[in-house]
Amino acid sequence: MKAKPWRMSVGLIVGLIVGTLVWLSAFVPGAGPFQNPQLVIVPAALGMLTVSVRNRRKNVGPYDPETIERNKRGRF
Image 1: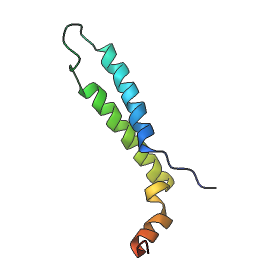
Image 2: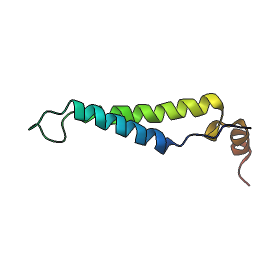
Image 3: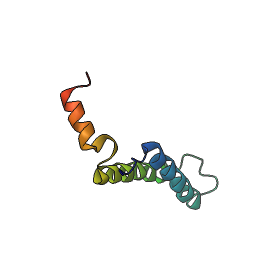
């Protein structure tokens, strides 16, 4: 039985949650809500990268050899 691919949105949401927690821990009152946006953006990007690497290693989703072969031949 093949593993199911993880969705990119799951990696994005987990990364945003982690990034928000990191951002809140580094929050300086009075500096405004847009201080250090990289603390939220970078973990979200790393979450999506983690999902992509996992799917590639397991050969699922867009990295499935059957899907790649079908796309090479065309959809019709």
